[in-house]
Amino acid sequence: MTDRPTLTTTAGSPIPDNQNSVSAGERGPLLLQDYQLIEKLAHQNRERIPERTVHAKGWGAHGTLKITGDISRYTKAKALQPGAEVPMLARFSTVAGEQGAADHERDVRGFALKFYTEEGNWDLVGNNTPVFFVRDAYKFPDFIHTQKRHPRTNMRSPTAMWDFWSLSPESLHQVTILMSDRGLPVDPMHMNGYGSHTYSLWNDAGERFWVKFHFKTEQGHKHYSNAEAEQIVGKTREGYQEALYNTIEEGRFPRWKMQIQVMPELEAETCSFNPFDLTKVWPHADYPPIDVGHFELNRNPDNYFSEIENAAFSPSNIVPGISWSPDKMLQARIFSYADAHRHRLGTHYEQIPVNRPKCPVHHYNRDGEMNVYGGSISGDVNAYYEPNSFNGAVEQPSAKEPPLKVSGNADRYDHRTGHDDYSQVRALFAEVMDDGERQRLCANIAGAMAGVPDYIKERQCRHFDLVHPDYGAGVRKALADAGEGYDPNGIPVDENTPQAAE
Ligand code: NDP
Ligand code: HEM
Image 1 (cartoon, rainbow, N blue to C red):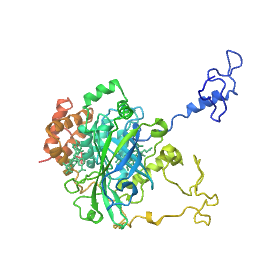
Image 2: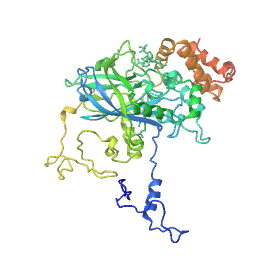
Image 3: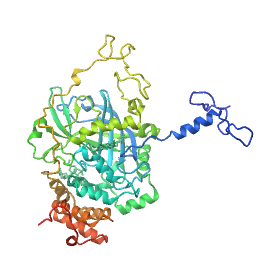
Image 4: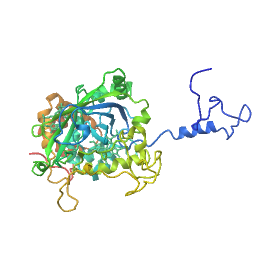
């Protein structure tokens, strides 16, 4: 006799033999009535769900957010009041690679956080960079196509990447960060996270403030060079998973300091740059970071698939006191993620335990795929519509955010002409980076341009010239050093190529 649990079918019936299939005679054939065999094979066929269309490779853990500062004058959100402790889930990721991609690839890292607040789930789905490649959501699918495999060769295409980037100068800021040291962190613990977009906070008095969220690593920044990363990938493709899992398993819980930058609502109208443009940061000197608290990751998932692959992070998840902004990219993401989840995980994906709010949920959505808890969980089966006379859930007016003034004609506004895509990149290149970092930046860019046609290299280098003459010159020198040089005077340029700097 044994005290181990009994193996059963999924319907709970004991399985007498999990080694030998039922055959007609010792040598076969098999019988269709061997339901246990059929169930096993059928389940195996359904083990994979669609991977995320972007950010497919990821690593995650559970943790706690603690609020130690006082930002109650900006927000009524209970999760952000002094002393609040909120359970949370984090998932880090690379953007372009598929689920089996190597962890140590140069790429932007996703930094997705789900806070299970007493007023519902609040998700901040950010990156390890404060800006992004495009500023209009209309261009997001085009950008992502340049990062994915070429339809014919089925290989990644540097030509597609640099063609798109050189035709989209709003990408310069993010491209510069991606190609800098910060484009290849050693593991998820040694990088910052940024909400990136401008969000909003609002208080009980009905005042709105625009905010940027920042999560600063308390482990310090650590990066690999391309050469170091190649060595690592030769040994393991799962370096991030190993590092995050082991550090938590050994009780060395990683922490990030949470900060916000704040802009009063009306200041957006007079600010010298568009504060809702995702390709821009808010300079620290003008909008100093305010300490809010910190989060630590302290529990590994017991089952990676159930708790990390099944996790559904969405910028649409906000709570009273926290909201969005007019940022055109953010507006599109409010739609896109829940739509992706309904496709990837199923209609009622929020009933999957890792996505379930840790507060009461009452709604009138009914039936449909995966609806295992029923729609209206109101305590009265008669209340499956609203309004009703049977004590069904009712709205909460205090959750209504202050009205937002909008103005202007509905139109398709040119988001390329008349925008300054260079000044903030110049500040990063000339004032934040040191000589060594500038050199590594140029070398990384030259490496990433291998095989790209010369006229595209030249178009991109002219954008670097416009950031800073040393930037363009540095990349051209690095290209020559890498054997990828070309004669800029000898190649045809098209009308999309900026004029050569004087
Ligand atoms: P500051 O000197 O106050 O801030 C510079 C920031 O740059 C610091 O937050 C630092 O992050 C970060 N940084 C350092 N090295 C790199 C790198 N290789 N890639 C990306 N970021 C780096 O100046 P400003 O606020 O005026 O910003 C100047 C430029 O710094 C910006 O144009 C932008 O490119 C970049 N930056 C600005 C941020 C902001 O929110 N203002 C945030 C991140 C970058 P840390 O403190 O974590 O070391
Ligand atoms: C994942 C769309 C821009 C960060 C995803 C997914 C979609 C998507 C469809 C997969 C979701 C899933 O299957 O669970 C978009 C669109 C964008 C956009 C349409 C622009 C219009 C951004 C930006 C950031 C970002 C600007 C960061 C600031 C992430 C992260 C994930 C992700 C971190 C992975 C979330 C996770 O870990 O599950 N995006 N995205 N995306 N996106 Fe975006």
